[in-house]
Length: 262
Image 1 (spheres, rainbow, N blue to C red):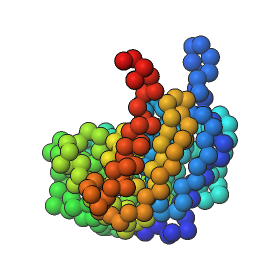
Image 2: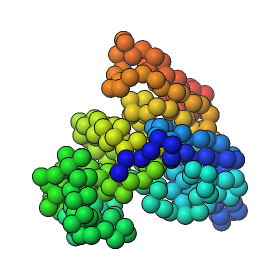
Image 3: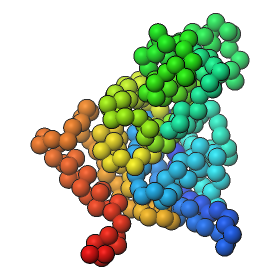
């Protein structure tokens, strides 16, 4: 299912998120304003514990904001929905289902005829290069293949927005590069609005249209880097602007008291 370019706008208006703690409330996310335009790919990067995943979980409808407003295409986000797909680092596959069965599970809610459900699931697996492995169980698949199943399952539902929380963090470097290409190919076909949470600066710069950097906790957005370089991108002399941005982001992420210790 291809997402129209005029849907998938996420608006985050004056959102603050606090959680109860033994010593009172803790602010997990400081006041945040952000708009994700339809069909764009935004990477969110920041130090551990700064609130990246908290913000993503709020957009997914898993966490309610303490203040502010979150909307998707003008409608308040009040809980999880089929319009927002989420892919985590740990695949979240059912071990008792095959790859095909895992993708079909995500389609059950639509109550499609069995033949249509199977056809749609197979098409999604073909799209991520796993057609020949449709009948294998998760334990028979590599880490990269498991994440391909997770991507196929999510895109098969046709979400307007795709949230990805460190999706390739557990993969080896070579597999990760392969997954970058796969993700961009599938995204460019479906054009869901993507928010990609990562700790990897290079990954953010190679994949995204926009990179947003968050501060130390309580997290707030401190820098925006729009990227208009053609893909595929590389860190070389012709991509010197990327190198400059990378150094700048690494400086922002470096603990401020690191140098004072010497």
